[in-house]
Structure formats: C-alpha cells, structure tokens
Length: 280
Ligand SMILES: Nc1ncnc2c1ncn2[C@@H]1O[C@H](COP(=O)(O)OP(=O)(O)OP(=O)(O)O)[C@@H](O)[C@H]1O
Ligand SMILES: O=P(O)(O)OC[C@H]1O[C@H](OP(=O)(O)OP(=O)(O)O)[C@H](O)[C@@H]1O
Ligand SMILES: [Mg+2]
View 1 (tube, rainbow, N blue to C red):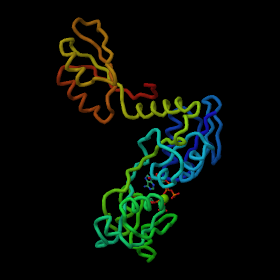
View 2 (view 1 turned 135 degrees about the vertical axis):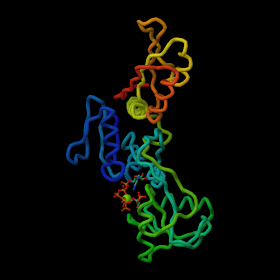
View 3 (view 1 turned 90 degrees about the vertical axis):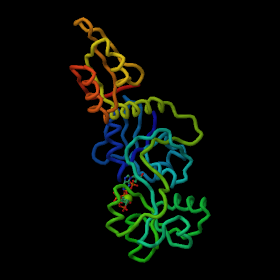
View 4 (view 1 turned 30 degrees about the vertical axis):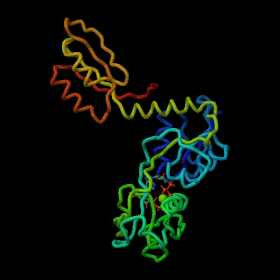
C-alpha cells in the first residue's frame, strides 16, 4: 500500500484533509494518527507538517503533503512532484521601520526565524554574514523583546507584521504553497501515479466548470474560439435546423465574462455546472 504523510495540525491540515476527501480517500476520525484505506490502497499517516519531509526523505514513507518552505527548510532528501494550490504564502524578511531596505542591510544583524535552514542558505548564497536566532513561533514579537533585530517569517495577509509595526525588507525569499513530495531520485512507489491523478482530478474540478449552450451553426467557430475546452469542445446537432449544442470546460473564474461574450454572438440556453470529479 502507498504510505502517505499528511499534516495533522497547522495551516495546511484542514485544506489537505478536504483535498484528500474530495479525491475519495477515507477521512480520519477524532485524532487518529493513522488511517488505512484498503479500497484506495493507501495508508495515511498524520504527522507534524515540519516532520513530513524527514519521513519521506528517509524513505520510511512514500509520499507526503507539506509546504514548499517546510520542505526546503528541512534539507531532507525529498523533492516536490505536484503543487496543490492551497497554503500559499511568501517568506520575507522584516524589521522596524528604518532597519534597512536590501539584503545587504542585514549584515551583522540578529535574524529570528522558525525556518533557519531557508534563512541560512539564502544569506550564504548572497554572501551576507548574519546571526540566525531559531525560535519556534510568534517571531514577530522577538524584536520588541530584544532577542533579534530582524525576523524572517511566513507572510500571508500581512496582518501579523502590521500589528507588530514591522516593515518588509528586500524581495521575497520564497513563494510557497502546499506540495506533494517524494524521496529525491527514487522511483515513485507503486500507486503514486494513481494518487497524483486523483489529486490532479480535484485540482481540475476546482479550477473549471462545465458550460453547455446552443448556438447557430454559422457562429460555431466564434463560439468555439471563446470556449476551446481543454482539448476540443463537444458539438452535437440539435433537432431545430441550423442550431448546434456545445459542451466545453471553461475556467471557473472566467465563467461570467464568457457567458456575456457567448450571449453577444447569439448563444442561448447557456448552462453552467460544477464538475464533481474528473480524470483528465
Ligand atoms: N497564515 C499562515 N501562517 C502560517 N503558515 C502558513 C500560513 N499560510 C500558509 N502557511 C503555510 O503553512 C505551512 C506552515 O504550517 P505549520 O503547521 O508548520 O505552521 P502553523 O500553521 O504556523 O502552525 P503552528 O501553530 O504549529 O505553528 C507553511 O508551508 C506555510 O507556508
Ligand atoms: O500574514 P498573516 O496572515 O498575518 O500570517 C502570517 C503569520 O501567521 C503565522 O503565525 P501563526 O499564527 O501560525 O503563529 P506562530 O508564529 O506561532 O506559528 C506565521 O508564522 C505568521 O506569523
Ligand atoms: Mg506558525
């Protein structure tokens, strides 16, 4: 069975659970640490997100869901194989106003972070010597409390930084999101392809809707240009002479504007439905 590591807590756990549920995997009850789903051929292990790359990198578990930033910080022998589109964040330096505006301004400073691996590599690459202070969390307050001059942390909405009166320094160190990982340079374990196909199906079902409409045959080409589908739209004859029915997947975020444009060229009976599941 495919052994999969899943976040048990923190920012990624709920969204990862939802995605696995939508992909048809059994959900954990209460706070089970392990779930066996014999029908789907997987064993799910609920672990701290920070530890997931370590388990996968060591080969104890076949694949895992974690954050790109956590993967890189761990320096584990694991690699990203599929981005999942949730848990998005950036990783940034910040300090009190006036601390500096570029990476070079961090020279000789004390930098507090829960991600010392990322920060140290970034400083080494840039040739900027600084002292990295490892904290477990709530790093934004460390400057006020006098243990650091600068912080490096996950920024999502920016609210925490604003509340602490801190300003961003330099450009983003990293753009992160949840990713599927496997052991680096190892052949994918049996069942990996099927797992990825299921998750890709969820990603597509979230990103696209199905659009159906009727159009006069002579305007079909214009309509198909508006709704080219993923490969090619389905076109079927209608009982009424000179009309055809078209069915195509369209990006969810463009649904309304595509309906406006279709209407303008004479499409009628435009219907939009959610895709519950798919394999592309
Ligand atoms: N607002 C956010 N705060 C923290 N992490 C976030 C946020 N948005 C996305 N993430 C991502 O979630 C992962 C961090 O999750 P993790 O469970 O380690 O930390 P956490 O959510 O801060 O939980 P904890 O309370 O255990 O510190 C990283 O990949 C990070 O990029
Ligand atoms: O930009 P924002 O939307 O404000 O989110 C980012 C903040 O959220 C996280 O902290 P969390 O609440 O997980 O506490 P922690 O620092 O103890 O991990 C993260 O470490 C930042 O502090
Ligand atoms: Mg946190």
